[in-house]
Amino acid sequence: MRTISAMLTAMVITATQAMAAAGTPESEGIGLLAACFIGFGVMIVLFQFIPGVMLMVGMLKGIFSLGRKDAHETTSAE
Figure 1 (cartoon, rainbow, N blue to C red):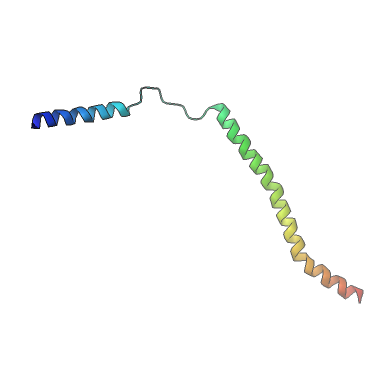
Figure 2: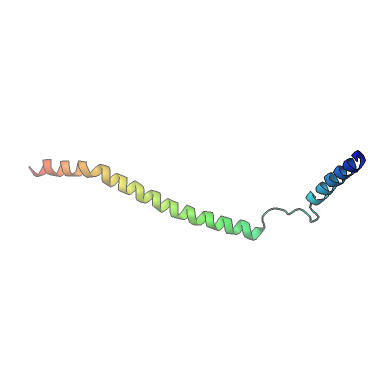
């Protein structure tokens, strides 16, 4: 019984290793078209990020300079 069990265990281990080994050649990673597509998507995000940052800076300048303009106009009008 132990012989059959040992033989069966050895066959299962060998079969598992053989099934885990890929029969096809390994891929070389992503292709040129996929890399261009990913790069295009990154460029879209980047080109939308730059105007967004400029808009945010302009809004912050407007918010923080709003109080100074009102105070300056009221003192010069008197």
